[in-house]
Image (tube, rainbow, N blue to C red):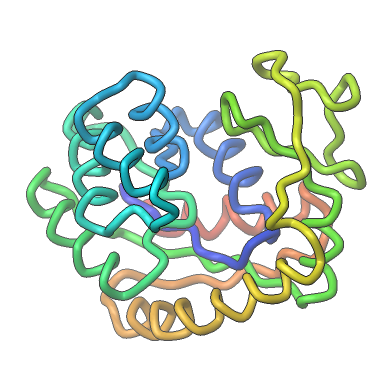
Length: 217
């Protein structure tokens, strides 16, 4: 099974994806995590991505898709795969479809987490992330056990500059520009697209999220 989890910044994709992946023993695929790992290990793709990032440029789609292809090749065929926030554009969605075909897979379902902008701005302003392992916390709803310290790896948590309110508003605008066509893309796809209201407690959202995923197994 391959399921794609979509949603705006701050909607809780990472929290929900990690929890479900652990429960289902599925592979959780986050392109941010793949990039961090490739850069840390100094792989050829990691070095290529670093060159773009050092130049202040976005890592191009072909590099991201190559990372995804490489990662999928190492996942057992019988293992479920959960994509967290990828693809982000229809171009990436088309590229992912090709990559999945190459490894004998296809998209079985898409889940879209949705919440009002006000809720997202509050969530992001309280978000703290670990630059070392990618874990994400929230001072309001999911605080770390020890303030400013990652529970997973012990790294120092940071409040990212792009989580400032003004920047968040712009990120939401960009999301709407890029993702509206992507939602339409998947709505016309044979694989079902389910919508889950995410401005509720983590457990309530998780219950509906899991039900949506189980519906495509």
